[in-house]
Length: 189
Ligand SMILES: [Zn+2]
Image (tube, rainbow, N blue to C red; front, side, top):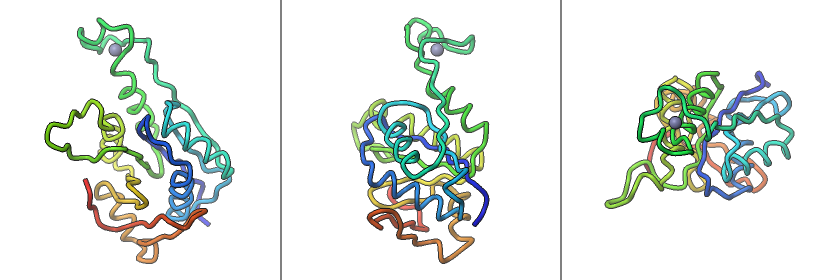
């Protein structure tokens, strides 16, 4: 058994699948060979994925660490169009940057829409924040994995390298329902 993991998560507010969430956490711990006890789920305390995953993490026996966004607080760096609103549109990205900066063993992302936009699709409503956080993690060289359907996909070279280090871990079938597999190819985005 390896060291406890710090698992950074990001996900859509409309994500709602406790079963896959629990399986994804179990598969991630198995991938890292990390114990449940002492491992931490770091999340943004938003409705949807954050709350679902935090609940499942606690059921498994993991610790959780919430980083709520300061939605009612602008910073000097906020642009004028943003400062005109009561709600800071940049608070989520700011919070995500802080979580990424703190570092993590791995990042798992739960988007409800694909990375590439369909023709005419508006990114504003298509898991934009989730993908932005996944991108930030990837750029920070945190291995980043996307949960899509019942599969886990590496998002970027760090995650791909992690999966390739141990061929036996390329396909993991774990969790309550044993449904999640980890694939070593980057496919649907
Ligand atoms: Zn602002």
